[in-house]
Amino acid sequence: MARIAPVPAENMTDEQRRVHDKILGQRGLTTLRGPFAVMLHAPEICEKVSDFVDHFMSETRLSSVLTELAIITVARQFTAQYEWFIHAKRGLQLGLDAGIVEAIRTGQQPDFSDPEQALIYDMVNEIAETRKLSDGHYASAVATFGEPAVVELVTLIGFYHAISVLLNSYQVEIPDIPGPEPLTEL
Image (cartoon, rainbow, N blue to C red; front, side):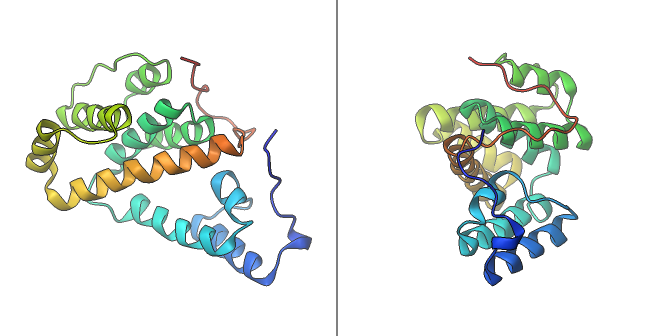
């Protein structure tokens, strides 16, 4: 059970209601879940984080498949089940190979045929393990994606580290809807 319940509609402040309705409208949702349900307790943070996420879901220089690969790899590092559930599902819908998703889910080394995907995966894991990016991966990333995209990617990785900590700290549960299998424990 989550550590903090969503803010009941009848108890929302005007600011919480405004942010709640804005996020639902932007995403075409009927229920606020996951990190946003937690962050709505601090609506000013919730709104800013929502705007930040919107950039990565629609305006990033990297393809959506590469973005989702980075996010699910971070989720694996933290065993962040909610993050995994939402983004593995989205990655599969966008065309991320099911074999890659399953390997990440179970903590195995994926078999990448796309060198860009392999580079993203390696970068995410290196940052999680060493808390920085090596000269080799940095140079490869800049040569492959360009400097602005690398800045976005490293920011995305760090951001989803923070979201993983939030989700795990508040014990946010996977929604009861169809989706990918949960991450295995490592």
